[in-house]
Image 1 (cartoon, rainbow over the protein chains, first blue to last red):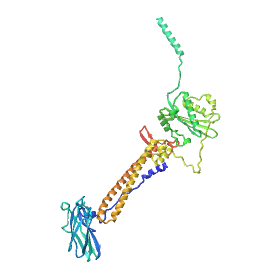
Image 2: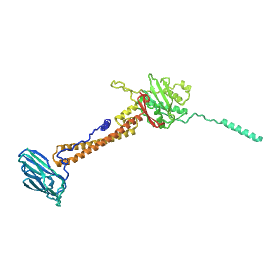
Image 3: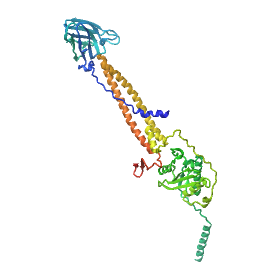
Image 4: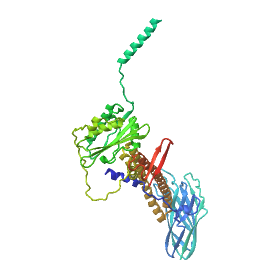
Length: 175
Length: 342
């Protein structure tokens, strides 16, 4: 029995292991979106859909610093799509759900998001999270663009603006 | 003046008288130390071999040419018996000289007793000089077992070894001391396997250590180096095994996260997965390098172990220098010499 056990020793040195090879090329990976963080972008960046269809697009933050509130100024082609609803994402979620105010006026969607402080924190932790999800309905064919407007801003608990270096664009193609 | 001359003459006479009454004991004792290694037996029982070897020791001791080392001291050096009773354990010069050095003697006697057919015995002995590293003499005697006893032959051999002529009394004397000869029971194989050529001890030790490091050394009674090699390789093997399990864990984590990354669409999840994938990939690479290093070290030690097993194994008389290859250390040029002969 001992000899049988000893015979395993040579086999231990024959263990073959391959090196891990990988390619981090997922198109939805924020690192592959070609934005300089901290940044805001649309996810997914391109949507191919049909008319009279409801679509969801997330307003995403990439490596954002901690923030307490946000004003997201979204520009869209109001002849192609209409805004159905807006749901806050996890970025401003703590122990309390964030407060959200939406103003939609002819191609300009203003979303105001507020972090509701708790006993642990009065602002979000920051990072790469969705700020909000916008549900749209397509009303005509063609291509339209989604943009972050100039009024887009994030503020921290001290009401100082949070730096955002880059903004992504979104495309909706309705067939 | 005359008185002085008379005095001198008287003193001389007295001196001569005293000298004539003094006897000086003459001895050929050389002061050389000699060890008689236990004879090997073929078809002769162990107790008889022990008895005959001791008889030779005592006979040489009685002749007072050599200072014969006591049996207990001689037997302190364990001689390797690779194949039991049918093998001459220390029959070549290197082995005898090596043991002689360990015993700190000037001469070594090694020999064997073989039982032939019809109760005939063949006694063979060799006298080696440890200082000169050479075989001084070889003695061979036949004993019928009826008219001549083995003990008588051993006495004759003692005279031969001592370089003295065998007295006539021994040539005509017939020592009829009863001896019980027990034949070795040779077990027969149940299977009729063909007779394979004998594997030289060095090659066998090499093969054993190739299969399991240290086993060849242990087999040739070099236990400490053997266990050292075995322990080292076992430790390295254990380290390799642990590294392999660690690698396996990292690889599982890598595969799980990489698959999730490839199928994922959520930027947050992908962002988190990316760092995990990089970490797990780095871990697998690290453990793999560790295992490769262990393999390298283990392989080197393995080769050293194989060479060591070959070197420490005793050379067979029929093998040494006759065939295959041989590695020997030559102290005169302080180098190992590789000899081969096909």
